[in-house]
Length: 414
Image (tube, rainbow, N blue to C red):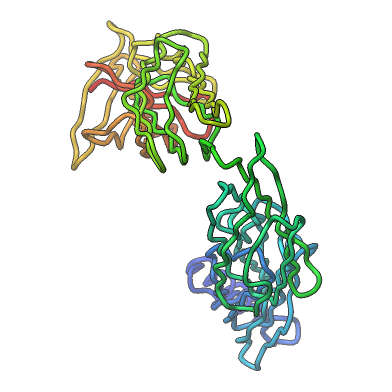
């Protein structure tokens, strides 16, 4: 009986001081067994690592024995696990070469007693490994190709007209190589590939495109912009004098710069319609070999139909609209330190809707975090946060659109 009373008192003390309780349970033999750690830590760098094979060191500090695993062991492994008598230890996460274009992520799971913790890490893809990851050459020019490998490497080319140096290198040494091509006098362009082999195992290609001797090179050939009025800048690289033409009245060219690298500026009017619209910008040069031209396709999005709504409130919060209606609701503004709140108050139902965290002087296109709070009869019924973009503004109202794409909108009086 005394032993049972002692066990009950121990359990009550643990409940009353849960934050510091070490979950010590008394067994039938009178011994105590620790089931939950009081110290549990896992330290690793969470900065994205590059695509080549690397090792991530991880340190662990627990006061109980621990185990570690990976959510996706198909492209990473846990090696060199060490744990001393005090349960401090370390291990390494070995990553394979990411030969995909995009990044990939994984999660470490540390288990200690009845608790577990997770830490995620990201490995970049080839899009972020080579700079640039897609080479465009003009006849007679050269491009610097840079990368930072963690493995020994060699390189070859797919075509004899493509030249580069150096042809091999060692691990953990930053590389900057010159890529050039023989003169290309044909009309159009030609393509080639730079062929890398890392650690004698991993094969990676970098595509190359070389343009004819007289060329107007556009790094981008198309772009989609928002409905707002704005200025468009297009970078060109050419060795000929060219002219610029557009085929839409809502797009105006602001100026022409002729030779070598240039930034061409265009003015785009606001799209007040409900449909997207398109235009083509043509860069043309007349040379001894004939006409040289490049085109740029521009698409402008329509105005969102939500801009037709001019009633302050919160819209599509869980499928419900919380909008201001006269006679039932009072609309007020509460200023704070650099931000303000919009409050809708219903005195009859003793309800209030608040949109808080609205920055003063915010510009269209900027983002912020807004909080939506619902109170009913003095009791808070909802408190949600949304990352929002200031989508549009007129003389009286601001339209905020949730960046998560779930259709949530906030309309706020200035």
